[in-house]
Amino acid sequence: MYYYSYYPAHLFNKAMLTSNYALTVFGVIARNVTNSKFSSSGRPFQGVRIHIVDDFGKNLTYNQVGVYVHTGRPWNRYYGNPEESSRFQDSEGWFHTGHLGYFDSDNFLYIVDRKKQVLKYQGLQYYIPEIEDVISELPQVQNVCVVGIYNERVGDEAGALVVISKGSVVTAQEIVHHVANRLPANQKQLHAGVRFTEKLPANANEKTLRKAARDNS
Image 1 (cartoon, one colour):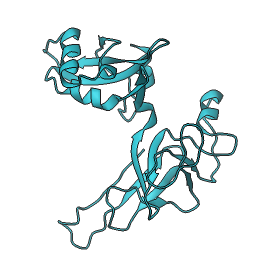
Image 2 (cartoon, rainbow, N blue to C red; image 1 turned 180 degrees about the horizontal axis):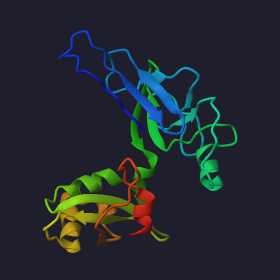
Image 3 (cartoon, rainbow, N blue to C red; image 1 turned 120 degrees about the horizontal axis):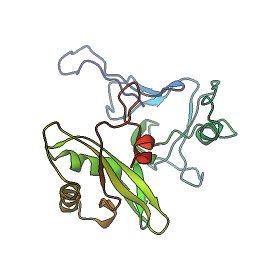
């Protein structure tokens, strides 16, 4: 997902703020060139359809969160990965983007989250970046990736893969205690513990590969 914005309006009176919602696999999905509703990704790009549905495929209305996308453009699918390809694009051509968003009454799209970053523990949802932000408060932590480790009894237990700053010392228990103090809700605890690593797995753009991080946890 990419967002672009240029030239703050209070500095450049004749500038226009532009924001895009796009995916690497097929480009721009929505664009906002109205100089209003700055938190919105805009309206669907030409030729693109966006379908707001819940987890069961039920159509949702304004201000309700979900997202499928239909671009009408050809896609060659993921190389050597038919299972993930079929999960990403269904038989009717809709892309399951993994993002969560909604339309307002003026048909402006707002992207609010990534679905894969919201997990459940004992039936209660927790938000992965919230836990990562808390762990990052510790000065000894250089980088962190929180993942869900599946437990058939309780669901996804949060676990952290942590990179320590050079010359710093911190224990796994100190990180667990810090999270417990800052986020007392039971579902947000590091039930799967903490592991230390020298480097988080990342792609060529330095974006953390969460699945690879989970496999290493």
